[in-house]
Amino acid sequence: MLTDAITEHGPGEHDRQVPAINRDDAIDVLLSTDERHFDRGDIDHALTRLLERGYFYEVNGELRVTTPLSE
Image (cartoon, rainbow, N blue to C red; front, side, top):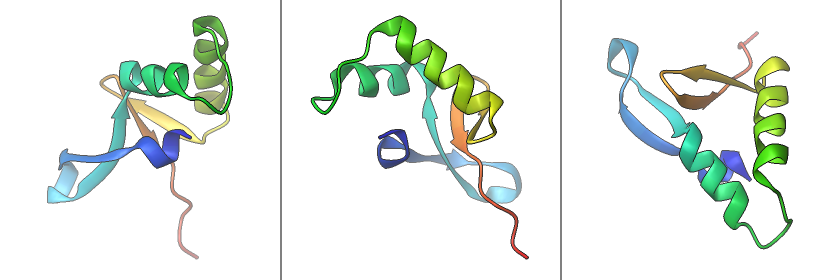
């Protein structure tokens, strides 16, 4: 759900676009979904777990999708 909601923000390092979503906006997306019902505690826990497992990383309150390295 979150990866679908992530939008392109301003230029990042080396003038590249970095797909990201503000943490508060991510919470709003998950609270407003009709697919599942989440409460705020569940969302905070899920975001923490996604960060801990490396699916996202956080920079200045923005969640960014971790992309696999090219081989």
